[in-house]
Amino acid sequence: MITNNGLNNQLPNSLQTVFEELQILKHLRNAGIKKGNGFSCGYLFQLVFCFIFEGKNWFRMLESKKSVGLPCKDAVYRFLNSPTYNWRRFL
Figure 1 (tube, rainbow, N blue to C red):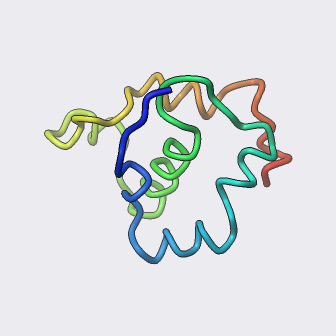
Figure 2: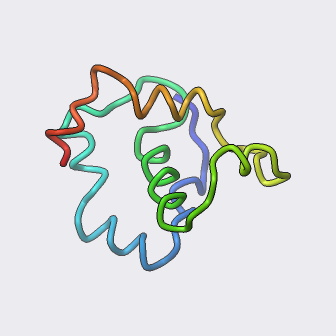
Figure 3: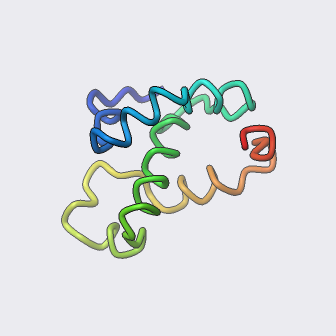
């Protein structure tokens, strides 16, 4: 598995507190949402979550200079559309 130090520290402080208080990452694992390699499910979920609340566009972000170190769009789409992930159980 690729380990990227500091990737989990990308959340704003207010969202980081919410993620810790609600134990979001633990609930992801309990719902069977796990990966064996690449970016972690926790990181991808946090990334998508932040984009939604900040009103950012994934396509525009990948075209910008800030895209260095971000997962490619295919990784995010595979994460969101994986048939083996039980999103209903997570919710």
